[in-house]
Image (tube, rainbow, N blue to C red; front, side, top):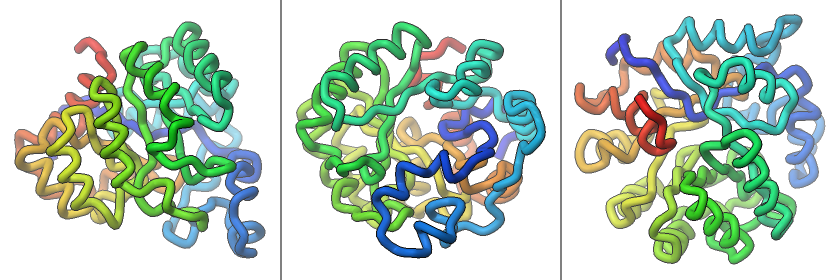
Amino acid sequence: MPTDIGIVDLMLGLPILDPDETYAFLKVNVHDRESKEDFKFPVEYMFRGVPHDWGKDRDPVEATLEEMDRWGVEKAMMGVRSKASKEAMAQHPDRFVPSTGVDPNRGMEAVRDLVRDYETYGIKAAQCFPAGLMPQVDINDKKFFPLYAKCCELGIPFFVNAGVPGPRVPMHCQHVEHLDEVCWYFPELTIVTMHGCEPWEDLMVKLMLKWPGLHYCTSAFAPKYYPRAIIDYANTRGTDKVMYAGYFPMGLSLERIFRDMPDVPFRDHVWPKFLRENALRVFKLEE
């Protein structure tokens, strides 16, 4: 792994100082006692050493930039809805790539919110966690179509969680096969899947071969657990399709991520694309 690349992280956030408030939307959907009462973090059973108290009693933007600089992260995608994230975008537009979350259950209001955030904050992406919605919405459900169409018009990518969700909620809405219909119906749309696509990573590779606009990022996975099918694809025909995303501070520290990263068997020419170049192209950012 080269050390002279300004990394673009597609999933990085400010300190989470109130986990109950941050993850309240998931408490509505879970039924088991452990998820409702014991977990600070909805997938705590899957992760060790979650940095719960990171950034406590510090300026959140200052603490985040310090950690990014320590590990060579030049830019990070971040949502624009919280007061702290808006301050981060305003103070450091060169370090944070604005994105916005969407809920297709809100119909045209969701489309209007998307356009408003595009015009106000210059968002570079929309994103959604289908299994975390209430009610859940399949990736290929018609409720999503106005949002997909608007992203095509605005020329921005759509990030969507795919695969079995970590929180203890049903998985069907995030089946990777749903992407096939979306890519067919919206050939102009750039789609980036998040959170692994497991256990359908082989199918995801087939679909990325089939559809030019379909991409994959590694969010929520420590590098030692990157699916083998994805590594092999990045090393061959998928060099331009696979991008780095972390999970800090939601579930993984940057120290954990970049301690493991050099052991990922990417070929030399893949690293610049994986860590930086593919993301800049997808976001249409100038070098």
